[in-house]
Image (cartoon, rainbow over all chains, first blue to last red; front, side, top):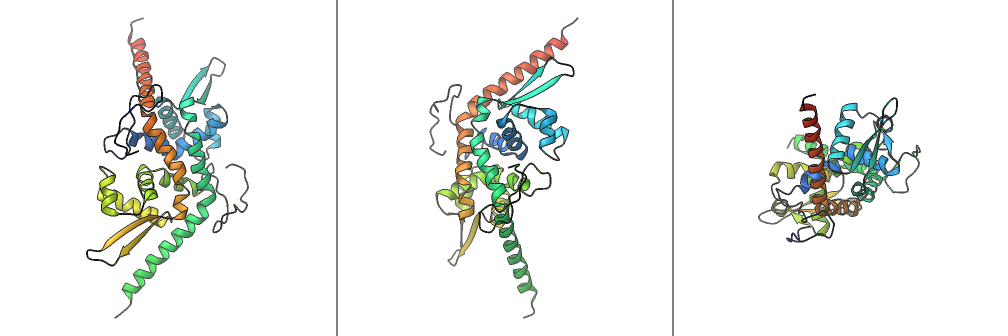
Amino acid sequence: MQDGTFASPGHPGDTARGDAYAADCPTRRLLDRVGDKWSVLILLLLGDSPRRFSELKRRIAGVSQKLLSQTLRSLERDGLVTREVEASVPIKVVYRVTPLGRELLGALRQMIDWAETRMGAVAAAQARYDARGEAAAEMVALPG
Amino acid sequence: MQDGTFASPGHPGDTARGDAYAADCPTRRLLDRVGDKWSVLILLLLGDSPRRFSELKRRIAGVSQKLLSQTLRSLERDGLVTREVEASVPIKVVYRVTPLGRELLGALRQMIDWAETRMGAVAAAQARYDARGEAAAEMVALPG
């Protein structure tokens, strides 16, 4: 990042290296999509094995049909996931992570692992932050 | 993830391990915050060295004052960043990444590195996806 060069990145199919710190770089929107929690949860599930829509829906508690469809379509468009329709009765639709999507799994797994193990530390920090805010508000409210 | 246990995670200050696949787990909102592109860009800049608000604003091209302030406040509340006011004229406000925030840097760096080097491959996948959609629309439009 921020090396100012747009040289060949050494990946076939790539033409230039992006710079997420530049305002107009498409990397930013890409970051938004892959950092989205639904994308993260889907990609990690597909990293374990190919799965059907209904299984994804069941595993990701509380996700709506619409959000899951939208996110899968966006992941498919970005080349991170494939959607295969199997000719069976009833029709079976199977999603798989692509090699391009698989490159992300290490980072996403670390991120989710951090969030799952450190949510207690984050909650404690939030409580301290909010208490400081309340203390400051009381100081202001004190007479004299 | 998904081991179904809420045992001690071995981190001081943590009380339980979260499960991002559970609908009501706070891990989900936490994932949203740390996966947000502004958080990623800020944390990586602060990972290099402490920085002032004005420097962050300059380095992250196109970010608004309001979004930068909001994101910094959210990162501070989550315990990922500290804000120090130095008694100088004019007053200097310096942001630093905390040890808790530093734990995330490896994953975030991988994510941004992937996005910057692979944006060409993603754009190519999008072009293929959109072309398939257009071809399918033409098939439908063909008479009989």
